[in-house]
Image (cartoon, rainbow, N blue to C red; front, top):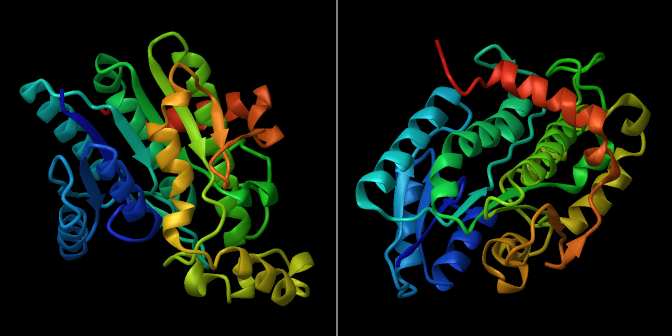
Length: 296
């Protein structure tokens, strides 16, 4: 039976390289992104490799939870109608913002980096469970280490610092990922986090030059820290995609769940704060409040 995969934010960069890797592994890949022109180029590039199944593109702005719902409805309906399995969901979407702004009344970084993949995953769980054994891969980041670990609301107290808020949203998503793995244990749906390490992408190109994205305490040292970080994010996207591809396809991971696949494409210990039950419960409450699975 044909194996299928959905990869979000996959018209370029790490997402496209992940889609290429899944296509090479025999999956029929659905590329998801905002721009139809970039989507068409991504599909053309994948199909030029001669995959076993042609790729396709679905347009969705993953910064909009309404569009996330529409995407989930379409994917679920198509798989139900065709009888095809949904074997793999890779939530690759991510964004860092230099300045604070809201999306639907909620801070943008938290929406894009956590609520969007959370909602898409939850809405597609029935489809993924019906296809078990199947896999969910959520892309994480080393930026979780600079996160403010306060989740009383989507916005922590204090000023807005994009790099730290990006890390906080990624920490929320990592805590959710590990919690989801425990919740789905025994269902045949395996859940992994994949840390790409570093790669030169649209997100890292330019945003990191703005010192406003870090706290004043770090700002004086930011040029030095930034250079170090930029060196670590200068590798090819094809290498950074390996953890996601391994998490999605490696047969050695069959039957396993709740693992973080590190930048060397091998399991690593999860960031400790992501395993804190207090953070897990707080993230669960925030997710259910701001991205309800059923709308009025």
